[in-house]
Length: 230
Image 1 (cartoon, helix red, strand yellow):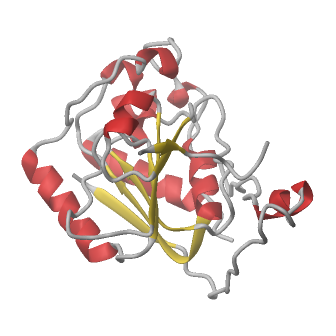
Image 2 (spheres, rainbow, N blue to C red; image 1 turned 90 degrees about the vertical axis):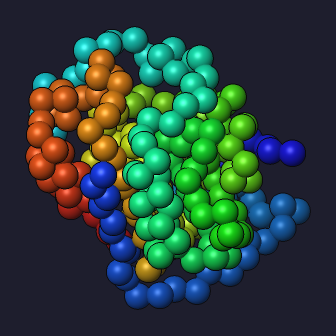
């Protein structure tokens, strides 16, 4: 039975690798011997930003309702065509490793992961619990509005891959979110961001809505560059 994720404390496609020296990670002590301060040490520290990419105006949206309200009703649809999905699944097949731990950020009822690949753990994040509960690839999930609070509250260096599929256009503070992602990626991990020219227009940020396909690619490149890999 799918369980909500419990934090450790009370088509263009862009790809980034975390190229830092490998580091061994040992299992944590059992609950009976782990105190609160030890758990705080394991939790990822707030991501560090090299520079801000967006202006305040560029972060704006036409629909000022909270994202939690906008996505309150589940949408069991795909927002891209079959060709895009096939290409994305093939990319995952080539870039992801079986047995790895994956964070599917801003996910929904489907993750487009290759059916034949098995992973140690797939954690999903999104804004609609009903959609996430329907996703057969998720072992856990959590609901969080990243435009209200960008902290992921996940352990440092705990994932081999992070995915963000056709949703990056809705992030109002992408610099902080990308920095957070780099903090939870393991050394050598991969971060795959995919997007198309389709969107919920009223919920996409101004810099995305007003841009061309090329400028949107460049915008995501700048998001990657804004997050400090450490």
